[in-house]
Image (tube, rainbow, N blue to C red):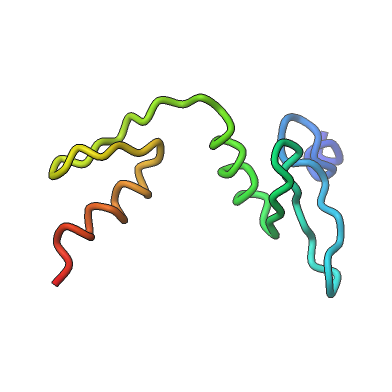
Length: 80
């Protein structure tokens, strides 16, 4: 079971290939974008799913599919 998790089985990101300098590279099978962290690839893959944009800015109404993106946006309203 542990070997399956480490090898990318079980729905996680595919096993990384080695990029320049031996750094692991995870490549999205849907769009070809590459990342060096498995978590970043998992988060990226969610963009390809049809998730509703359920996080709305209370100031202007702009909507986001991730809370962290909304929080970054909200700061623009209150920047000095």
